[in-house]
Image (cartoon, rainbow, N blue to C red; front, side, top):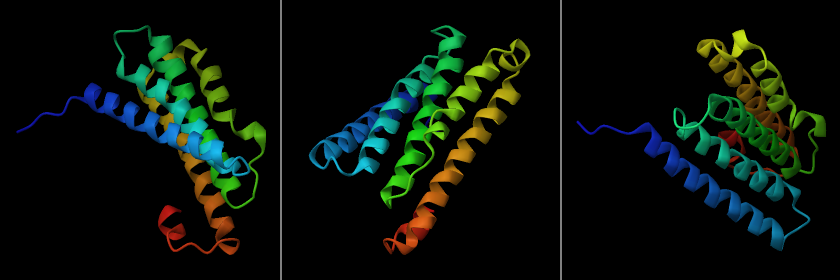
Length: 155
């Protein structure tokens, strides 16, 4: 049976996310009025160093591979949620974009939280799920603006 190395998968994911982010930023550069492209590009590019640091867990300090890495991933999710709202001309309140990362960084300052793996996983998952719900809401609200056949699947 073939074994899959998690660090290799994370490195490949980092490369793919970087390419996608770069493509979104390049598309936005050509069509600057589409702020959704900028949000998605910046979001993906924010996730890249976070996933790279997660891949380096054990080789770099925990405050980088846990604290900063997850904060960057959550910041990227916030940007992508803002992009989902902007896609149909809406707006996610700006304060919500970095809110998940800020909550994560604040929680990581508490030693009992930082030392408790299951609690960290649950917390980052809940914050990520909140952003995912925001993306779904943003896309669902725009169904009347642009009736795309893929919208339901995306939601």
